[in-house]
Length: 221
Image (tube, rainbow, N blue to C red; front, side, top):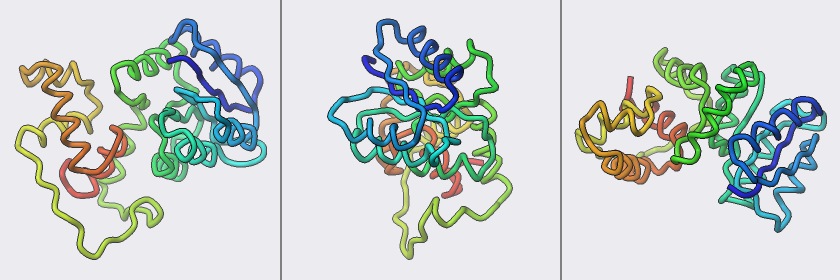
């Protein structure tokens, strides 16, 4: 990690997130802005960012637009939403837009730092309550919002091996790769390879997307 973009309208919170970033990733360069249009402008520049911490409630729009701009212009950047909103109306559109993680500001600083540290091992930072909400959403047999999953007339079947399915179920429950490796008595590298195959078969690129897609297809409960 070399460069972080912080998009947050409240100066005190903006400085707090910048300080957290420097603690988690020593020596990192932080660019901090307070508006959605500024965040989108940063995304559209040639200046590459490795990570972006994006608030949703900005004075001139939604942070979701910043996430979309980052995914469009800087696909190598990992956008992580940091917000007070833990409801479905904010969570699912953010994930659909391409958010790599979703954290809540109400969490203690040390928890946020621990969540962000997971990025170093390729694991998306998800607040525990958010991970539970994703599973609960589908566990209640609620209809998937139309913007989240477009209808398909003939959706191709996904064929996971028995072990891939077991790994996917544990990923969806929020276990880390080392925890899954320990539970199954396998090496972390083997679990990582399973996860890579799962992502390829589900046509997803993150833990959040895999959880959503697996739940939608009835692969996890």
